[in-house]
Image (cartoon, rainbow, N blue to C red; front, side):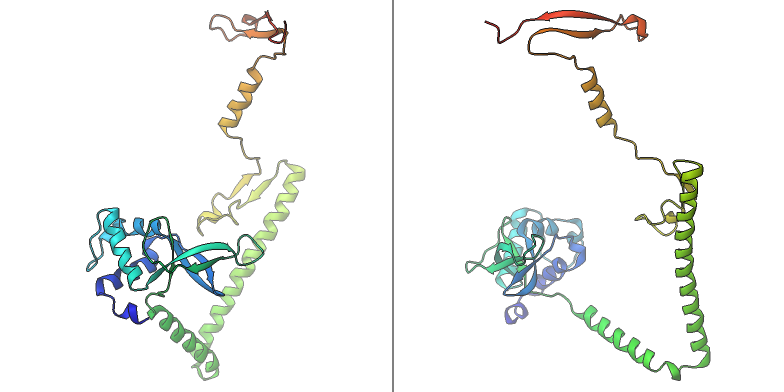
Length: 269
């Protein structure tokens, strides 16, 4: 946009910071006239400008309070980097569909309002990715013209990748068969590489080597609640109830006794 090109350099740097991934802003996807746009809440941008990552930037306006952050963000709004929008109902039949956005005529910046991005940030990564894709396609088309050594290296590399994929599937099948056998012979069963499909690192996927398939333990809080419910005296609307009375600090079963106490019925006349 022409207004964005006229923005001061420090405002442009702020926009690049907020649009990048280092800002840590919570960005959502909305729909404006059928086109998808990223939008955010004002207080999310204020927190990003008060973060340590922003303080390390050079050539940007200094921000120490929320009022100063709001002033800087007002500059983004004035040069049409972001525009104030109103969020409506979902654009599709599902509740998870992007919500419809509508630009509000009165533009201002507030922590409780929503703002849509009309700035795509630096485009050098897009250009670099496009050049890389073209280079890969040309290299694939010209594969017959490659030197024999390079073609042999690619062949060995492809065989190695296929071998690793085959080894992974073989481990998954063997561990499943071993688990079924141990369920029958040594219940509750043993898993080889129990974290193979867990969301962990490559090395952690193979640690430990094996593990019993034990059920997950219930939390202590739930156990305590059940114990409290079990200790509560059984009581009716009226009549007598039985309460367990412990002895003088001794936890032996014979030191406990029961007493019967008469309780008046509240509904009795």
